[in-house]
Structures are given as structure tokens and as C-alpha cells.
Image (cartoon, rainbow, N blue to C red; front, side, top):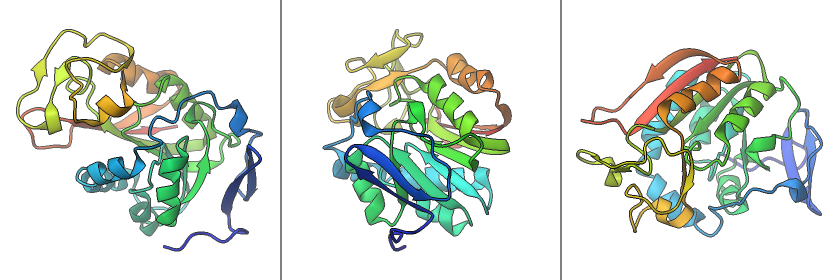
Length: 254
């Protein structure tokens, strides 16, 4: 899938620290200089792309099934290297990815994904400017997941779909030693801990979280973030055939 030409629908560039849009998608005013969050995946993009290649196809198929087919504008929130987006485009969606990591967005651009570098806590798009949204494995990275969910609700048109696929809060977190999601998780105190952590039983020396840290929300607070943003739940799945699920998948309606 070739990269979009400069005059295409979502040809968005960084220019002197400012997001400049040549696009039919309305953008709110935003500058890179206002982004206070940390791009924790910068410097680890290629490594993560290789590690993520094993689980990405399953998450992509799951997200594509829950989203259904386009057409319409689809925002991939926390798109990273854009590893899921080609399949979604083949399903009829006009995909735009957003991420704070320039290092990961470089990989997405190489895949031909149209992207914007921005903070998901303050999405630089006008209200109601997307038909659907997607986010995959992001709540464990975002500092304030409820704020991001409210932002997604804001940029969706009425009736828009939001599909979220991510780590299961009951078995992925500081309290759960579950290397490579194999076997039976070894549970420890800490499930009710809310916020970022870098050292915990759930962090293995060779894993992703030893590099970038993580954020944890117990299941109740995780689900409540969507409800508080005004979403209505349509599907709730624990999709894997394991003794204990590693992933959770939800489809919400605006």
C-alpha cells in the first residue's frame, strides 16, 4: 500500500513543532510542543514490531470482525507501527493512525499508513469527525485511559463504533506473573493498584514492560471508563482458548 501523496485526504506533516493538516478531516488546533506525555516506545520500535508480530494477527482478526466492514473514516488510536491497519483498509475503512511515538510512526509510514503524531489524551480532531475508532493494547501504556476514552467518544459521530482489544486486567498487570501468556498465571497482591509501575511480579526482565513500564486499571475501573464516556456496550469477549485469558475485546457504540 503506497504512502499517500502530499495532497491526499490525510497528508499530515510536522512543521516547526506544529501539526499541519492538508486534509478533509477537521482538525482542532494542536501543537507538538503542547504534548507533555512521554513517547516511551521511541528507541524500541523495531524490537517491539518483531515481538508484536506473533500476537498481532490474532488481535487484527478479532478487531476486524468486531468492527465489521466500512466504508467510513476509522481512527486507530495508539496505532504504533500500523501493523493492523492494512487489513482494516482492505475491509473498506479509510484508516488514519495516531500515536505519540515518532519512532513507531516511522514504521507505520513505511507500511503506507496515513498517520498523525499526537497525544491520544488530547486528540487534534473535531467533534464527530470519524465513523469508527479502534485501539489495540493501549490501556496498559496510557497514563490516563479514561481521558483517552472520553476523547474517542468526542471525535466519533453519533452511533459510531469503538472497538477495544487489550490485555485482560484480571490476568495482565503488576499482580500477575504470566510470561508469554502461557500456562497458569501466578497471582500476587497488587490487583487493586491503579497507575504506572515499572517493578512488580508481573514485570519480567526480558519482556516489554521492563523496557517501557505499564499502567494498570482493575477490570471494574477499566469498564467504567467507557460507561462514563457515554458508550453503550455491544460485545464483551474473552477470545482465546486458554486456561486463563490474556486478551479482552469489547465493542462499544457512541
